[in-house]
Length: 398
Figure 1: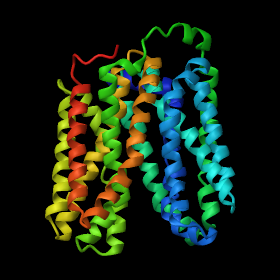
Figure 2: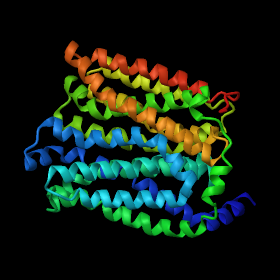
Figure 3: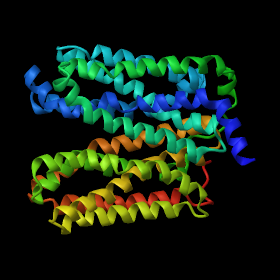
Figure 4: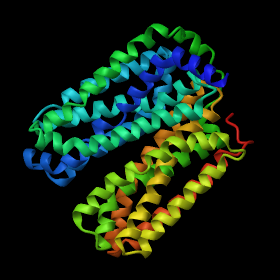
């Protein structure tokens, strides 16, 4: 009987599920495709490291600045129309960035970050609104889709640019076709959107989310796990090189840490939603980080270093999907989910933007990776404390 019910549910919602998956597919490739091509872009345009670094920093700044504003757009136009507009903005940004002029490259990157910021915030709201009884499962599906496509984009950027002979401009622009597919799949949801925007605004009685202690715990958890992840992405190869790993293998470890985390990304919300004390999942994630980063301090053997990286991958993979699940689970309704998501992601990407810089500064002062890794472990402790407080059964949002 349960299987039949699941089958009926899927047949009824398959188009929306597919739309959500393709929204998730578009959350990261336009950003993660840039990193592997940075050296090529620098050589082609003759720009310095600071100018090149802005190509990866600008989207994070857009996330932090725009995320708190997205709920207002949603209350006015509804989730479906706002997400459709975000897909259009993302597509425009990708093709505007198809230029050999630095000004257009920056402008397109800013527009891309703006479109993704809206989708980042509203997907948990869609899950809360349309899948209230399957929050864990749907969060697993879309966060896994997001992370898988992010890893794929970073992995195929250089082969597309060099192996396929597209060059860096066309290689980055090619992700626009993924956005176009997302637009096509989201059009049916515009017809399904029956919520009147003025009624939405009138039916929003919640006090400011920024006054809620639980909302701050959720935001800090999102922020600290983002801090750990982006520090990892920025500095893992350098840490492994200092341990004697060769340059090629250290570079591959960056892709490995994202791939190995995919099972954790998928299963963590499902498992956490079935636990009597969901905070246990946060403690497990924190312990994996502790063991993984502890291994990066203690070990020099390649096999043990790879094992340490795998533990970190499982931890960071699970933490991002649980962060999104907490938002959908704790919010009272889809509008509060949008408000909470905007707050959490503003804090998250603000911290994420400063994390790699802080670690780099610490390394410059000490000339070794012990202190930067200890800093990550300190943040990991804060992450566990914030997450367990947010997931307490009595923790409510005002």
